[in-house]
Length: 360
Ligand SMILES: Cc1cc2nc3c(=O)[nH]c(=O)nc-3n(C[C@H](O)[C@H](O)[C@H](O)COP(=O)(O)OP(=O)(O)OC[C@H]3O[C@@H](n4cnc5c(N)ncnc54)[C@H](O)[C@@H]3O)c2cc1C
Picture 1 (cartoon, protein in one colour):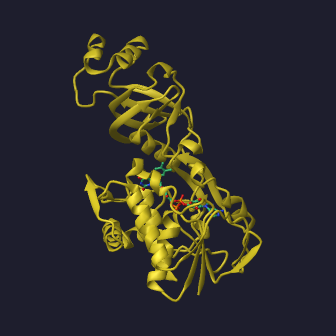
Picture 2 (tube, protein in one colour):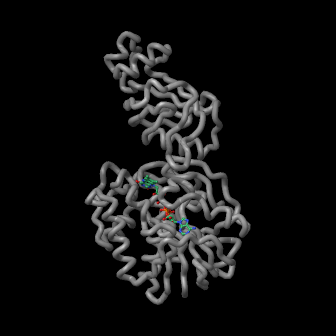
């Protein structure tokens, strides 16, 4: 069997390795538009690659479709598998990293495996057409496959090769593309926070839709001249997309002293917070427990880690094969599956890659 994989990122490389290990006789070719494989992996987890999470997965993703696949190949399986290709792991709280705390370790070990298994890699090659008969024409050369796997990521971080270029092509083949939006990104707010640019503070962040509390998380919040950021805010961006909440009626409440139950007088704010933040709260008559910021928009795709939306799961069967074109599969972020921060997105990339490798 001849298998063509479009995209040499986390899911594409993982599935190529697993297909070749499970079916040594299959020919596997990866097409990657960048000049090297796994370019994005190097940037993940602040260069440390947070590749899985052992917390319960329920609720961490945008759609229940993902859960059976993630349960078949969970964080323990991923850890075991990484060990088998020479990557030892370490867990910080419930987050898995390579023991080296270096994303380069993950990329290099995976690339070594690709070479060792004799997987063909065609770099600097952007696939921009295909036929339902699974034929690709790239750089004037024709390739005929029995199976095609789309592993070309979403629309976030175009500087790493993922600009959503494949979606218009897929639309011409009849796929429904769910609205693409930056997720896991800073949130622009209506209030003027220019004076807080650069402030970092521990807070409890609560998402409200029309004043109703929906989601809460503690962590560090970072202010930008026009936005709030930080992992808790990225997760709130994920929830806004997941629930399709609207600008203006969606607000984020920050409690800057969640551990302190009693009321704090304004004169005391600067005993708890830094000067910039306490003066801002006092000047604008904002309660230290209840600072409300109104969702205006997300930062753009260049500044987001993951995009929500993509190939609709309505077009995909439970083994990730297209319902429209036989022998064509979709894995990773190209699908309308995304998750909050903490290793969940790479977990999906690997679990969906494993699912397809096993179902071929
Ligand atoms: C800065 C940053 C930090 C992140 N940190 C984490 C983290 O710590 N933990 C976590 O779980 N997730 C993290 N993520 C998200 C995670 O990296 C992605 O969800 C994951 O890589 C998606 O895997 P994928 O294989 O679907 O797509 P990608 O890894 O994006 O790979 C897709 C590949 O396809 C190629 N491609 C696209 N179009 C074409 C085409 N037409 N022809 C040929 N090739 C094409 C691209 O160049 C790219 O190499 C982070 C993302 C970013 C940007």
